[in-house]
Each structure stands twice: as C-alpha cells, then as structure tokens.
Image (cartoon, rainbow, N blue to C red; front, side, top):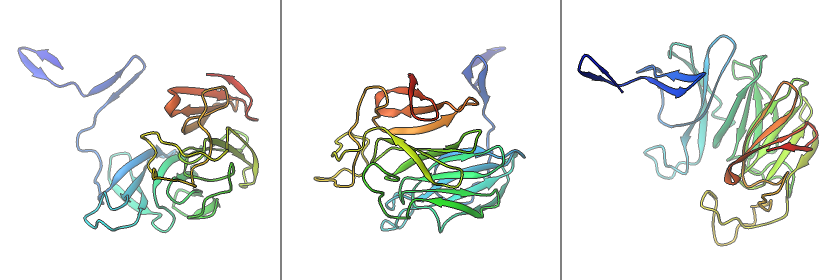
Length: 247
C-alpha cells in the first residue's frame, strides 16, 4: 500500500528481492467452474492450468458428481484457447511441462501419471487408471511427475504412500525409495480418512530418506532430486539414484 499525494493506492506487486510478481487484474477468460490445482507454461508462453471440475461434488451444483478434471489452456494474455483431458483425469494434482513442451500430469484421484504433447495427445500413461498400485510400488495418489535432463522421470507418490519412484523415459520403473509398509494415517490432511483404511501405505518418517507426504518434486540441472516433504516442513535433496544429500 502506498500513500501518493495523500491518496492510498494498493500495490500490485508481491514478493521480495529477485522474486517479485505483479498482479494482472482480470487476466484469464475462465470457461468453466472448478478449482485450479497447478499451472505451467510452454515455450511459446501459453499457460496450462490443471482444473478440478468436480471433487466429490464440491465444485459443481451436482452433489453426487464423481471426481473429474481438465487441462485448460490460455495464451499469455489470458485468452482462452482450449480445454482437454476429461477422459483421463479424476483429481488433477501436479502439472509440469518439459523444455520440449511435453505435459506431465499426476492424478491423485485415479493413481496415474500421464504424458501429453502440447495439443493434448496422450503419449504415455504410467499406472492403471482407478487401481491402486501394489504396496510400496506405483501408484497410490501421486502428486507430481518431472523429468531430468537425461530423460528419467521422477514421481512423488504422496497421499497414500510415502514414496518416490524413478522411471526410464519410456515409463519403466527403475527404483523407489521411502518407506512402504501398511499404516493408517490419522493426520488431518488425509483426505481419505475412515475407520480403517487398507489403501494407505508408507509409514511416515522424519529421518533422511523418509517422508511424511511427499507433495512435490523437482530436478536440477545436475539431476539432483528435490522432494517437498510437506508434513515434515522440509525439502530433502537426493542424487538421481535416491541417495540422500541434504535437507
């Protein structure tokens, strides 16, 4: 907030230092009702938004709607271009776009990771839609998928399983790390809490290489893997083989 000649003006910039952002009022011609879960941009400046159009009926007027979602695409000025993906998504969660403009999406509702070109054509799918993976293996509510510079894919498998998985560029599992024994998690963030939850695996831990809801993942140019360990309020750093480096 600024005082200019006695008048109060609200500042449209947020953040500090080198990380300051300016709010563009009215940006985006929003075509649908829903809640955005993640956002990313392609090399030409188009903006891709993962949208939950229904979450147990919460985001629509139909209370009994199943979970559903889409990818909504805008140009850099906020003009709506297209939307796609209704047949692939249940609960959109993590969205990441590669330097080659391939879209990687992790769906925490149907337990899949999908890969598309920028036009929405499906290129690859990992996991079986609407089926839980085996204990300790992909996937049980994955949260995000990213790709390293050598093409390997890393997935944080967070809500029902405290694991990280590494795949080849073709989607073949290389390794996993984190704990994977059965447990019923009582934490408030457990969206699937009930009296007895046989679907929840992965004992939460606080030690190196242990997680309590790995909620996001990214990889640097040296192919080190950064895991956002949400309920432990920390970021853990590993090499590409899952060896702990720092936190």
